[in-house]
Image 1: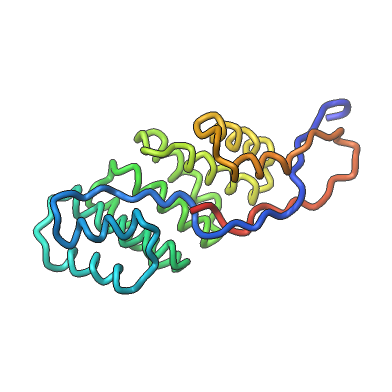
Image 2 (image 1 turned 90 degrees about the horizontal axis):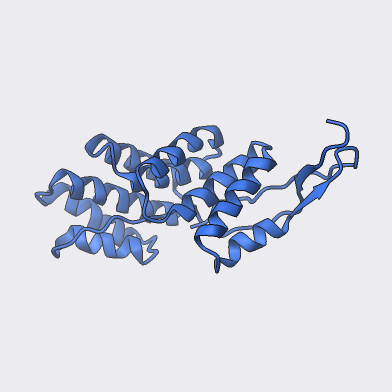
Length: 199
């Protein structure tokens, strides 16, 4: 529209690791608890993944803890950038507990890693509706997906929402610094969104 301003994002900011890894607390000791601790600690080790698998196969878990253990094993796979395998675990977690917000936000992260940006948006929306524990990560991931879908306005809005929720988060500030307001008749540079979502 002539005379109106446009938001544009410039430059490439390389990000490390997958987005939105939000572990599920499983208490009471045992393998499921150890799996939870490993996921929260950022592990990507096969040994920790096997602890989660052993819990799933041998421990008597209530549906929430079983779903949480699938989420936590998926997070370990996310940390290892094995997005398709992580996606399968998040799908299983949702089958056990369809209202587990962390399963959706992490499934969105796996989908972003698989470049399934449109599909990730509904998962992030579900996570926010279900009151995910760290909504700033959900907004950040949704911003990344919007950027890849060439929707700079919604990306900018979501980065700003993430910053409102986590004002000291330097990564969000770095992302917002890439945005400028430009007249639409100016030559627009190529937008290069982040290569990977945030962990």
